[in-house]
Length: 401
Image: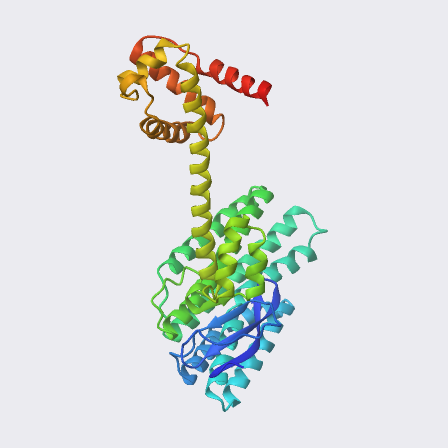
């Protein structure tokens, strides 16, 4: 097993359910180590080496206390999700307190904090229960009950905010700004209910309720920011800051099967040599290789178009004075009228790129020929139909094959 690493299973709440994922807590902050190849599930890799056991236990306690108002409120509505959050959070917090191994204790404490941190989503289960319990009633009664529930949730959110302040958690200004919007939403929906616009009131209340969930989430993230001294904005998710995902080699190899073979083989070889070790490196390598592959394909298409246009010009020289005059004016004819194909191809490659940028892939060859016709006419005053010449050329090729 991995030296100085502790592998445990944690329960992370994802919206309305609890998903089980393995966590690697590190004692030294390193990201190296062997992984059990039999398990292909993603691993969440938390960096805990910079924090003490006491700091992480304090974090868990603080998150628990700050979120207690919303948990208690949800439990009054028989929220099974809230019950599981409390049970699992308390379970890991007790493990952290009683564990003698420093690394495991820190891991358990952090898992407890993460578990408590999902408390805001219990409000959605309360909302769902309330809507289901009243769906047989008419719109007026249903919306009024929803209004009362939203007012309750607003009051609970204010309690959560006060709890955070009580624990010296600095909250971003957006919390108070959002609470002003909540009050506005309640006032507007109340007036809509009075006027009988129940569906409009319902929509306003739904937006207000969702905003309250967001406010609670920001408050909870603020606890992590303050307690862990993170230099991040609590309005944004903390996952990218606190965790790194490590995807097993077999999963990355399976993803490669969906890539173009030329791209997949290069990436597979890097995975096998352990030059790609995590999802971030894999994603960056795929992006780089796909861009290279795309550029290579584009250049191949451009070269094909240029070669066809050169063939058309070479064929047109036998019947069109306009083409010969244009070639001569642009320096594409050498001594004795020999065609300088290298210079012509460079010119046509630039022309093809310009046409592609203007019109895209659709009818690229035809659009290049049309643009070239215009240039020949503008420079010589003579017309030439390169499209007809192309058809004659391909028709001759077709009859001869």
